[in-house]
Figure (cartoon, rainbow, N blue to C red):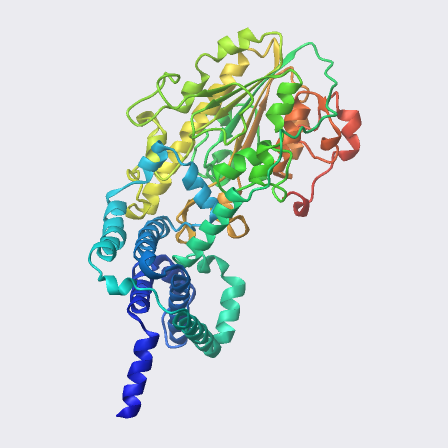
Length: 560
């Protein structure tokens, strides 16, 4: 009896009211906010006699991990608010992981921070509201309003140290019997671990915040390609339109072998579709500034790129008249120093309906810009809304509803695979129309200028493969659906290189890394920074002699 009394006292001293509250919060988070974690885990390790021990072990390990993390964060009176915020944020993360299979890493958080009102509205649903109320708002309200003050008395430091030690020992003990399974899991299934909520989510939040707070400061704007020389010898000025695509998959273009006819208009044009192009990132916030930067994917850093001249800056410095028109969120810092026009509202875009403003509206009034700059080279960048998800059905007018039935909600899990595919493919069909209209616009100037259109998508999209939707997966584990992007080129009669010269490069391994030098080359700008680059348009007559020795395939290992 005395032994039992001593044990009871020891447990009461070790498990104070606040520690019991933390354990309760941990169990709540594990049971309600980690559906995605266990869904992916059970796909890899189906529940049976052989796997049951490892699944229970890993469940305990992640529970102990959450508890340990909360022990470090929640202390005394502030624990009431800390735990409430954690419950709310975990419910938010759980919804998007469960609904779309996305991973909440630092890139995804950066995307969320930059999301505009229109994108936020597209992601909201009654499912989101209900989940937030039940899993976040309600338990947070109970913590703040109903839990007794005795649960928020500060624990002695030694009690916390003992709890942390107990948790560490517990984590070791649950791992030891299944050490071989853990070794495989850690080495081969990193993606699954990233669904641990809120531990990986909080790790990503700290990483994102630290990059913002402690980002290295670069004074002024670093100039790039300062040795640029214009070697143009033609009598015609360039007029090039570069279309930055949004969320377009390479394998959904019939130009690239897709069995559905999603490119009925482009297939009638003399275009080259590059078959092996990889993106710099899996999100707009990374890929767009990266593709215009001199930095490669491996070198790319957001803060560094923002403080460096990009391709548009170099062209502007060399006298090219640059215009950026945007029907997406914004230029992600690329067009800060060149003329920029927002086409997301009827104020500028004449082609808007109840759903949104259309990409085709970005062609309105361009004739005036060309006429105004008739004695100059011109680059026009059109940033599409394209296939921005998850509401693909909003990305095109009813006239392009060719493939039916369609998914008419942002909750993709409520739609069949066929409905998702149909709505996505209809949006590709509208992009085909838009690009064809861009070519028709350029043809009007083909007799007087060197005309060309270059279309490059920023990243791809997952449409349910492996239970993943949307994009922004960490690049090292991103599926090819998010990194293999379409790139299409059309050139006019006076351009420095014609399709027979370009077509042999259609199967070459290329990437967003090539865009910077491609643009410089297209305007007959010679620079040492591009001597080691393989430009998609490397057959430029004026640069041919300087670059002849560099015209060879880039090996796959050297493109990313």
